[in-house]
Amino acid sequence: MRLRPGRLVGDLAASGGSRSVTRAIASTAVTQAAVIVLTVIASVAQARLLGAAGRGDYQRFVNAGALAVLYLGFGLTSSVTYFVSSGRATAGQVARVVLPVMAIVSLAFPFCVLDVGQI
Image (cartoon, rainbow, N blue to C red):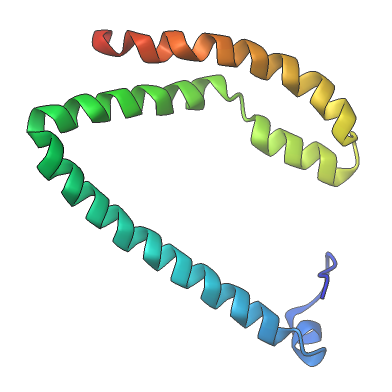
C-alpha cells in the first residue's frame, strides 16, 4: 500500500493498511532494541580488550571522524532529499552539484582524521 500525502490514519485503518503499519512499527522497535543490546555488548568487549588508555585513543579517533563528517557534510543529505522529493531538481541535477562537493570533502577528510593527535 502506498501512502499519499494528506491521507488520514482513519482512512489507512479502514483500507486494511493498519496491519502493515503495525508490522513496520514492530519491526523498527525490535531492530532498535537489538542495536542497543549489541552496542552494550560491543562497548563492554571494547573496554576489556583495549583498556582505559586504548579506549580513550579509539574514541578520540572516532570523534575526530564524526566531527569531520558533521562539519564537512554541509547538510547534503537533507538538501538532496528535499530538492528531489519536492520536484525542484532531478536526481541528475543534484548529482552534478553534489558529486564535486563530495570529492573535495573526501580529499579534506583524511587531514581531519590525521590531525587527531592535536585535539
